[in-house]
Image (cartoon, rainbow, N blue to C red; front, side):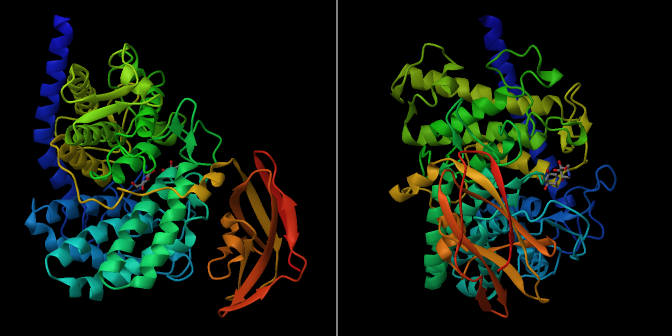
Length: 565
Ligand code: NOJ
Ligand code: NOJ
């Protein structure tokens, strides 16, 4: 027992020291990777974030919309919370750089035909045209969230004209893209699987809620109502990822993997809202579903990385993207291990704030890690259970920071990965996102939160619950000859096929022209009617009658091969 206590104190001390020394290193490391004056980012245009200065194995000298947006969200939080007032011009140059990138025609399309889903660009703001996992539809959502945080602050500061004149045009493009395309498949944040992805859905939901309230604030009522409608649909769809046994969010609907993935932990911390309590529909860090998910995720690495072998079953371990990962050796990632700690710190903030914590049958397994005799119930600040759980969970969280600390080289630099067998740094050096994750975990440990985004008080519509029913993945292929500039879309009888909509039908890909294709998740065991439509210069032409018709199977995937009629 005494040894145990010493270990706990040691973890706390290691963690505090590390956070204190690592934070300034991370801030400097992050700023070094932003053009045009960052010391490691020569050639990057102003406001452009390089993913890492690494140019070979892997070559990360590109700017990713996801990484850049998460990095700037961190800086915008620091600026708007008054922690670093020197960041203003850098933030303005980021907005300008992203406004430019939005307009760059790329393999995903033009600004109005899908180009906003392009994941990465050269650091001089030109298109990367090589093969890649595209589109990635989290980018526009994350970019909106970062910029809206700035916009809200500007409005509160009395500078609405800068918002309406400069930020809104950029935001509206991204938010419209999210609103119009969220129900189409996407490559996941790891750029590997083309399906629906929890992280993407969660951040899209958040972006549209924030977008709706900003739109309302500046009198853009049509946009506001469109974003709210689609946010409601997203919230509904978000519920469908839950896998009750053993209790986790399936990260991707495609992929043939366990589905247990840092994707979901990152979703929780990047959609944290301190005013939303432990709401499970938005997967708040302290919600029973998110805690159960966290345990499932962490435990999946205990027996696969040798640096974790021999660590007791309820102590912190190194974690990575997902257990089947082989990329660059498939090692633990700093940003993934930090994310575990951050989710727990966020949870502690809310439990402290509300003065109680609740154990449900869903979260019982998570809490019993700290005391096997715990039972379902609500424990308030006055109970010894509350006090001892808060302290055990704080220690558990500190443990994940201590694991990263143990494997951080003495100069404090953070690469992308650290070796699963000996903990030495691997893959891209000085990963900007790693530094951002070190900063956000430190802020959460210090009890800091960023602005609320409206996750409180949301309800999942009851009609939505039917779409929690199982879905099957359907590949639609149609052989159709088209004119240059003419595109083929899909529309049909269920909400996933836009209920016969023609204003937001599903665009098919012409990669295998004259075969046009897309994959959509549809309710299982359901009779579906659909048609392809062609749109040329805004002119809609429907396939001739009758409707195409088929019935989805109970599970798995189906392929339909059609010829335009
Ligand atoms: C590069 C991507 O950035 C990475 O996430 C992925 O794992 C590899 N390509 C392999 O597909
Ligand atoms: C690979 C990661 O999988 C992806 O999420 C990230 O955007 C790129 N590397 C750049 O850091």
